[in-house]
Amino acid sequence: MADPTEPLIRFAGVRKAFGPKVIYRRLDLDVFAGQTLVVMGGSGVGKSVLLKMLIRLLEADGGSIRYRGDEVTMMSERKLRELRRNIAMLFQGGALFDSLSVGDNVAYGLHEHYGKKLDRASNEERVAWALSLVDLPGIEDMRPAELSGGMKKRVALARAIALHPEVVLYDEPTTGLDPINATRVNHLINGLKRTLHVTSIVVTHDMSSAFAVGDRMAFVYQGEIIAVGDPESFRSPTDPRVADFIKGHAPEHEDVDTLLKA
Image (tube, rainbow, N blue to C red; front, side, top):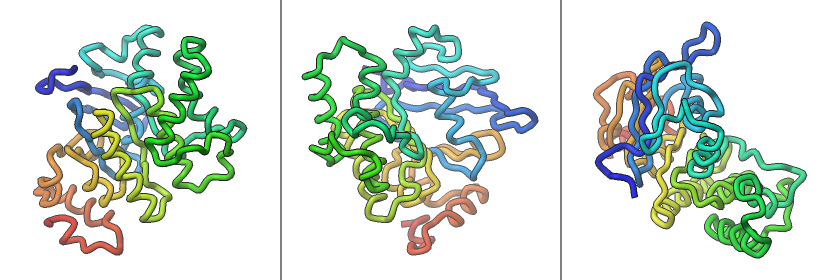
């Protein structure tokens, strides 16, 4: 078990640019075991880039990214496969394969990482277990085209947790969902933290979701993290840049003062 006084994941001085567009001039951020960290910021500031650099779907240009003390940016292919087994990602669009059944979609990561090490019965048991955790038991034979948007997100989450990861990365998990399904996803994030003791990093614009799931919050602005703290500190932010963002992204049906100060 990770030492709770030491970060499970640490970004230190991380730099990233796409041509002349600088995304991070200096990214410093710690993620602690068992917590849900919410990362917020305007469109295009690099929130999703942060997640992808952690599992090296994108390469950092400089700085250090450590997981359990190991330098991610220097990992061999073998260590990188192990990292991606331990850190699973729920992509914004779900990224399900339309040509595969729900069961085969959920099992995809199992085949990729375990191959023939899991027999058919064990594989089917793991898929059924993952689907039950996201409240979708018995839909293995359905196709993604038959699912609602909310169900697709939950199937994608089942695929992520089927690997028994230590960390789950959520890229805008409630985007495009109606309030009922968004609330269901929030409950799932909290429930998986309790049930599986996973560490989570959630990238979101949804302030209701942020305050519903976050143990800690971080705000990205012009290539840096300018604020990190507990939800209470973000309800009454002293930095006007943070306050303006939260007010600007509060749902229309919510009272902004209640969201910030309640």
